[in-house]
Length: 177
Image (tube, rainbow, N blue to C red; front, side, top):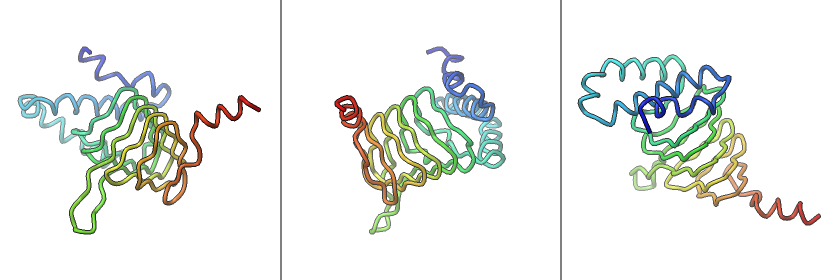
């Protein structure tokens, strides 16, 4: 993937959302700079501007070391906090107030961060913490607190989150009616 394709990979997915486009272009640029020590030195000023503008002014915490797949979409990106060790797959959607990161274990140490699959739709005010995996094609309802892994093709809601249904089984059930 060439440089401009990398920087603008989320552009089409966020059509009509100027704030998301701006933040994601800045994120992809800071993410690219972070890969090479020479670029980090030359563009130190940009790293500072990114952190100040995106995190402090716009209220979106997407750290420069974060691993994110293509076509990330977010709506109303206020209060969004993602730990830099989280891995987010392709074609995922994040909404306002989402928190994704590690949790403090009983012994005082910190757990690993979540790994989120492809085509995951995360509702507003969702909290996903701990060493868990969210499968592909999952929908997590607004306000859910996810502390256990969610299998692929599922819908999860509640506090603590529970799997409501398997999307494939639900479609099969509807087709058989």
